[in-house]
Image (cartoon, rainbow, N blue to C red; front, side):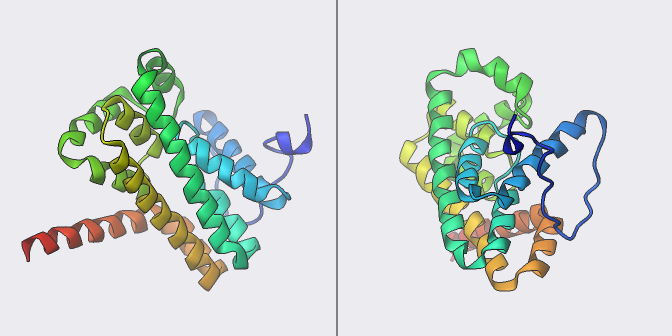
Amino acid sequence: MSQLDSPEANPPPSSGIEASRPSGPLSWVRRLYDWTLSWADTPHGFLALCLLSFIEAIFFPIPPDVLLIALTLGARAQWFKFALGCTVASVVGGLIGYSLGAYSWEPLAPIFYDHIPGFTAAKFEKIRTLYDDYDFWVVFTAGFTPIPFKVITVSAGVCAINLPIFVVASALSRGARFFLVAWLLRKYGEPIRTFIERRFNLLTLVATALLVGGFALLKLL
């Protein structure tokens, strides 16, 4: 096995935050996180970022923001390239997830439920009930917030929501998320990295609530 193939061969660059290393059932997630982050120290970081963003929209449990943050801090002048690659790859991966849901869901369902983190039958069914009235907003919210995007891409295919709506919502939400993170890192550097890593989930949820509230207010005016 080559050095890059080993999750523990290349320790990730220091983030300024001492992350605890859980034992037991969560230990493999931490090892996968470290392995993902280790690609930032290789010449193939951008390619790894695009691949990670692609497969995260289908099944991979680690969000691409992890590698996006590390790469942008290492080469802040390339923030636009990193964010664009991340966005395009995620949308394309989302289309693959959509296709799997639309054409291959029955044989794949047990595999997703048993082996893909964040993919549960209860969560899947709950999301399916929202598509009739909120198809755009369901996709947009998942693409911008910590909601597992893979659950949305596959379920959107199962429910056969309008494909152009799916693509537009995916592109807008993923682009807004990745470009915002990369731009903040480009502008503010290491201090904003620490803030984002500690508050990322809260920040994205607040931003989504404000955006949805803004559209609701426009309808009332």
